[in-house]
Image (cartoon, rainbow, N blue to C red):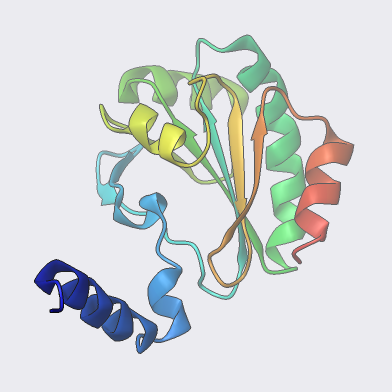
Length: 163
């Protein structure tokens, strides 16, 4: 006698194995929604043939404010090498806009919402600390998680492995 639950699991697994490999590349980031500094809805998607560096930060976080200018400076030459950097602020739009006026950052900055802390935890930030950086390779696979303030050598070495 075959257990019906076991048979259904077997059929579902077989169906999953027939899916193309890209069907498994989805990350929690792919379904998250954010807001731009101008108030528009936005999404971030990994696996678009580019390396993606996602930095979670907040205006009230001293180490975040210290590392953001370095990430901004690196983002410019990296863009031409197929590497994108995006900051996701865990803060209010007003605070982020005020900070951006002062800081003159040019990298894309999005604003998180009530679910953003859960997103960062799903991506490996189990402590819920900031700053928190995640790197995705060109296929959208999460390849690195870095908690705490980054130095230029650490982030450059990490990113260049997947360039």
